[in-house]
Image 1 (cartoon, rainbow, N blue to C red):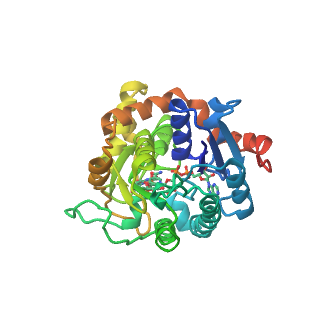
Image 2: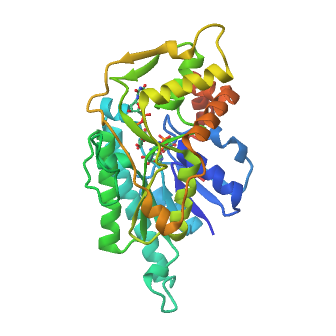
Image 3: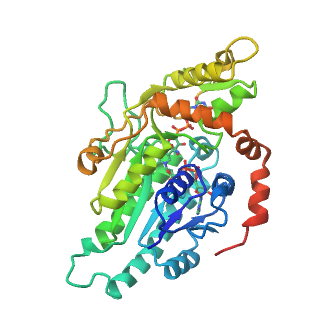
Length: 364
Ligand code: NAD
Ligand code: DAU
């Protein structure tokens, strides 16, 4: 058995690949375009490991995807590949449309061709219902598709209306709709997960938590957008990975599962917590890291509050996060303190040189 993971050199995808191969010998084909967000150094511990193959390529390259599917005959595709940063989507939405919408469409079509072939070849044999066909397409999505909550609104359930507000969330919403339609119309065996904000090791330092850690240590300002009272619901990345594994294992076909850890926090509190942890673990010669906090112009169209209701996943599939926010954020700060080279290679661009030397143009 094999699985095909897309976007597995990015933050969540790479954590998923590392966790998967730490607990299973089932091989992974990892298709990643290696955009600025894809970092093979994150997967360095898998070099020479026959269970993992990194293929540089685009989910929108139908020929490549079809070839990989035919060659490796995966029992599942887990789609992490996306443009993921809201600020970048505001400055340049084109890539978000291209990868998150058109790319997902092309991926779905290639997967549909492969899956139909499996059915024709008798995988739906022995009088089993199509739901017993072992193949699964799991689409990794976000809570941002549901829009923004007011202070006292209940958390997002799977039935919440779609109301995306940024080019990023609109492109993810479109991809979710395509996945849904490919199930409804063609019967493609899909699963969708909509998760809240992740944090943890290997998070690209353009996102709030790693940016604040890295800037604090560099003595730079800690830029808090607007009044800092926007609320996000935080989940340690390894808990997201365990939820995806659980949904892949036992999720009902065509269903959507919200993933979250019931950890709503205002941004300013997150930044203050990071400063307190750094004051404790890497104290400055004088003063607190909190003195570097700087309020800056707000993000245009900034969503005020996200909160995930994860009861369906908990009740139906028995999933629970292992980390509280307190344990997860401590582990995260410790990881950044222990891995300055990973950060430094990202900041200096050295990780791109590595990409160019080792992978550009190389496909299987
Ligand atoms: P990321 O930006 O860190 O990684 C994305 C990866 O996809 C990179 O390795 C990149 O090279 C690759 N990629 C981009 N375009 C591609 C293409 N056309 N073909 C193949 N590969 C391509 O993102 P992330 O934070 O790891 O997010 C992964 C997925 O999870 C995304 O779909 C995102 O929408 C979703 N998600 C993220 C969060 C979060 O808090 N980070 C929360 C919920 C859901
Ligand atoms: O909710 C899930 C989403 O979480 C994912 O789908 C996205 O891929 C992921 O990037 C993340 O989106 P956010 O916009 O919530 O994450 P970001 O880390 O960019 O910002 C978190 C909050 O912090 C948000 O309210 C904006 C604020 N912020 C962010 C940055 C980078 C700041 O105040 N200052 C900053 O410098």
